[in-house]
Image 1 (cartoon, rainbow, N blue to C red):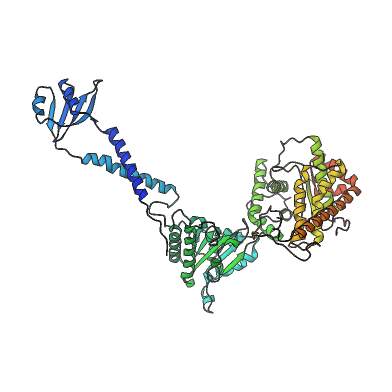
Image 2 (image 1 turned 30 degrees about the vertical axis):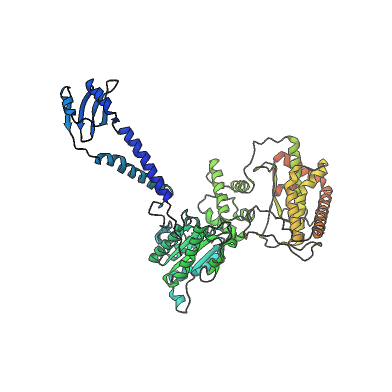
Length: 610
């Protein structure tokens, strides 16, 4: 049963108290001066009364005050022989039947209307459609079929998801193809994927392709302060959708509404009742009506299991981050509106941006266009897009950050160490750029590697190669300056986390053997910049001690191998670092030329297996 908001007597008492105070203030500000009858007689004998109106019980009129200014007064009538006393004075006087109607109108009705006006204004301020009688109305934005220009051609990089949703479009256009063989339309389609991958865009494309009305609302817009409001909005939304059928209801950020019940401390009656109403509505309507519910979330692990069962969200479509070909396709779609120069190579740009979403790629093209506009050029060059990638991935350049020559020299050797190890280590990505220009909050320089293809799994040799590259900067500093610096702190942290993951999660060590200890409460879609997190300790103290020894031994072995590589090529290390100090940025071709290597063919290097 739906639980309504309880009426509180305190609201009524507060309103009455406010009206009484307002009534008193108004009466004091616009009312006549109340004087004793004795003072009235004194003023009368002093001939300071100008005009009076005599009622049965009250005398009112005008008089002269101490400053001889006319003011209104009122007093209670005491003497019945007042008329005889007035004859001897030059005063106009008349009889009057008392009426309190005007006073009541001013002192009671006006404050009440003023109070209601303030209340109505506060309700309107709570949001669109949030008036006193409009809490239960839904806030879904209705887009008519002719108002949705988005088509599947406008969505790139998610071909598998488009293929799944094409069936929904076909069902909306030609339902008899499926109903004649006993099929029914899916009640719900859940789009699951990381932020920025185009889930909302896909839902609009489905509505645009099918040519049906499109209701769009966020999950957070259902939940209000008062219990029962969200449930009323759900009912209203579905009743409106049935009138517009066939149509699509799209609920963005479903996790704000559909979080699993019972996991929140203290509970949340409004959110849970809204979720229950949504479950009831999804069970209650006939799929032949033609209403399809689409929803999007990037946190499917916290959704209530009742939402995900068959008969509610029948189909779950993964909208993942695009691969290399998908990134190229996305860049081509967004590049149609931008004037690109002839030197722009979108495939190279896609190779530089592994792990970025469609929204990130669109932002890169937009940043490149802004840079070209700032330079007053008519076309966006490849240099603009390269700088846009550096801005988004590494942060803004800090050209005004003053670094002394000693620290700059150390940074140059540090970054050269990373690049040199990457060049002489098999199974690592090609070096794309080396820079000692500070970027972001704390980065004094960076070495960028460009993968030639997307990788979905990695061998032990490849992970060991990553460890070597991470340790390259610190080892280079120790070879040249005899000691390390705090600049390698982040490299060491990442290397330690990666090595620990190799031993505890990937079964690549000897202490734990073929056993894995996965992380608890791990989200399905990790953020782009998330590093390897240490696992929870589900093993004994003796095992932990052995694991610590193996972890230290693995990193020491890799550091020894990196030291050997850089010592053998110390002349090249110094040559590249000196060139970097002069130019501050070295591209791929320039770097490999200094090493005497072909950029397209990396050195086979030494055996990196432990």
